[in-house]
Length: 196
Length: 217
Image (cartoon, rainbow over all chains, first blue to last red; front, top):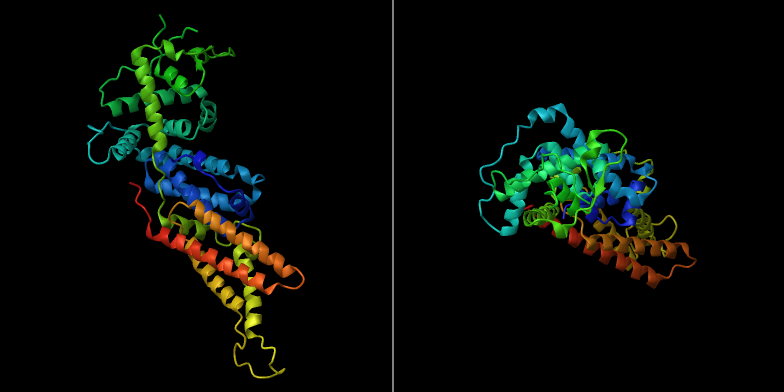
C-alpha cells in the first residue's frame, strides 16, 4: 500500500521530530519517504522531480516541525506539504514544456512474468499516459482520500472540475487496461439527470 | 426506465458519494440536485463497469511505495545541517545524551584508583568495573547506529521502533537510578547490560536492512 493513511508514526517519534531529534527524523524519513516518493513519481512521472519533492518535503519538515502545535497531525501535515510540492512542479512552465502529449502505447499487456506484477506494470503504464493533472486528481482522490472539494481548493478549480477529471481519467484507464479502442463510456458527455 | 448512468455517476456510487446533477455547472446559487443511484437497478453493462472501477481503484492502492535514492537523505541532512531546531545538541540526541553522561561516569570509575596516593602516578586504569565495559560498548554501538541513521535506505520496521523505545525506557530507568540516593550497583549493571543488548539488536536489524535493500519490482 502506498497511501499516507497506512503510515503509523508513533507519538514518541512525532514528538521527537517536533523537538528536532535527528534520530526521530531518520525514522520518520524511513517511514514516510517511500510513500512520498511513490505519490510523486506517479503524479509527476519523473524520478528526478519526485526525489526533489521528497527532499523539499523533509527539509520543510525539519525546518518547521518545531512550529507544529499538534504532533499527532504530523503525517497529515507532511502529506499536505508533499502534495503542494508535487502540484508546484506540475504547474511549473518548465515541467509543462518538458511533458510531451501523452500517447497511447500500442499494447499494455505483454503477458510476461507474475500476474500481480504485470497488473502493477499495466496500471503504472496506463497512469503514465494520462495528462498530469488527471493523474494528480486520480491519485489524490482514490489513493489519498481527498474529497473533490479539497482537490478543487488545491488546484484553484471547482469540485466539478475534479469530478470531471476523475471521470475522464477513469474513462481513459478503462480503455487502456481493457485494450479497447472505444469502451463506450460517457465520461466526457454531459450527464443526464438521474431519476431519484 | 432509468437513464444510463455516466462514469461520474458510477464513480460517485463506487465511492459512496452523492450523485449530483449538473445543475451546479449551470451556475447560480442553486444547490445542485442530489440523488441516489440504486446499484440494484443498474443495467448489466453499468454493473460491470462499476466492478471494473472498484478493481482499478484497488489496483491503484496496491501499487507499492518507492524507495528514494539514498543520496536524497544525504542531501536533506546537508541542507538542514546546523538548522532545523532551536534546541541544543544534547536535546537533539537524547540517546547519546545518556551515553555521554554515563560514559563520563564510566571513565571516572575506570580511571579512579581509590588506593592511589594523591599526586601519585597515573599508570592507567586500575579498576575493571563490568559496568564501565558495558558503557564503552554502549557508546561504540551508538556511534555505529548514529552513522547508519545518516543513510537510511529502507522502510523502518516496527521492531526497530520497539527497540528504540526499549532503549529510551532503559535510559529513563538509568536516569532515575542515578538520581536516587545510593546507586544500586546490581541494578545499574542489569540496566546497562539491557541497554547494550537492545543496541546490539538494533544494530543487527539495521545491518540486515543495509544488506537487504530491495528493488521495487
